[in-house]
Length: 348
Image 1 (cartoon, rainbow, N blue to C red):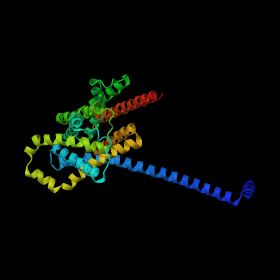
Image 2 (cartoon, rainbow, N blue to C red):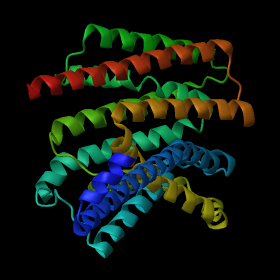
Image 3 (tube, rainbow, N blue to C red):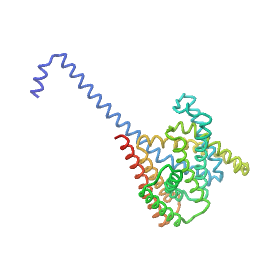
Image 4 (cartoon, rainbow, N blue to C red):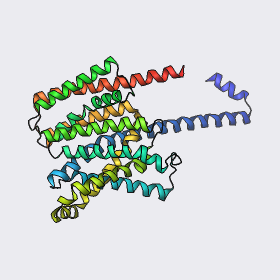
């Protein structure tokens, strides 16, 4: 204390004032940084809560519409939700003047050759996935989703975009064995539902491959994806609905929409929320963490449906799902490790 007092006595009033100002600035900077860290942590927590809830809520709402409300038109419902998302984003972009960084590259020819095929596959993924809920339990559908990497590896190899390593092949075989166990243990196995879900996974894998092959290094933001790709999906799905579902619709089905319009609006809003929150979570946590969170989300949805919705899961089915989860986590770990190794090698 005496040393500090002697030092203060040796300083002029002007120097003492400057030192006091510097200390005040440092304290304000530290307080601002701590507040910024707290706000950032709160934002991440809110995003994670939305991410863990939006997807399962959308699944349960869609299942309610298709099965409980007796509206067996997955193509029409997909068309509506996709149109809801696309029109909302179009309005947002044009009302608020959002800048689309890739707009100068998206010519009519580019759109027809590159984005329309991806839109077709995106629409097929959603339609086939929704169709599976007409025949299978929510729990079993979530179990089948764990086999998506199998399709991705197969098509990446067929299109010569990527050669899987030995460990990748091992992880895929683990996923396959777990999926077979889950299917064998399913007490309400329906071949049409399983084929619908597997077809949805094929379409999703092809969509990812075509995105990599056709768009190359052209990275879409969530707004650009909804602005460009979703309208293409709407067009394909609308054509399918016109020929496959509209002729079977009766006045009672239109009455279902009229009498329960609120749940249809909720489905559209949740569709926008799911598309948006996925990109936000990737930004905050990274792609590997998002996939792991999605896996945990699917598992929690299974537990919810077993505990509260009365869905039955056999012991063999549950064990098969655990095996698939192990292979799925290994697959994503190997992919992200290989990606980081490539980045490190390129930076040297």
